[in-house]
Length: 165
Image (cartoon, rainbow, N blue to C red; front, side, top):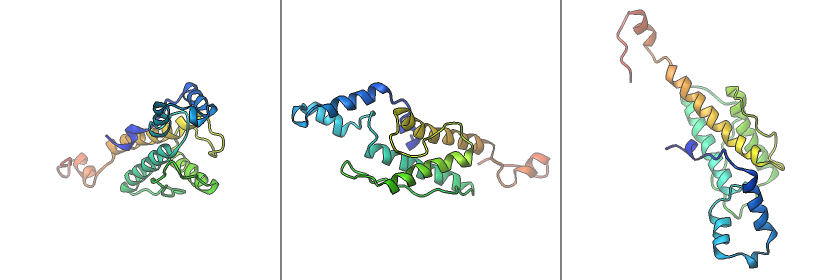
């Protein structure tokens, strides 16, 4: 299983409503199970440290795959993958974050649209950020399945024997 398999693409309005319900209550009124759900279960209706880390890891994974085939990704900047619940991202960090995700879209002509900034993203925007990375991974798999390895052209033309690796 790769990091791509952990990407979340099915957040819903109900997930957002659940977070809003938590935030409307005084923290002293929360039960222990509510605290655990909010802090430990990575609520899908909020974009938090676990989301930032997961997307950062997925971007690094895809970058390694793509660069392994000899391609560069203009605009790619390695993202932080050590966010904690106590970190507050800066505007600059979030600009780098979304621009790095967008760099994959421009390279692969992906279909999925992603927001131009992280300001006031919706659950659909959050889904699309991770959906784009899944789409790019699927395209890489297609390209790698037809990638011509050294000597393959000669094998096809009958000049030599091609041994698949």
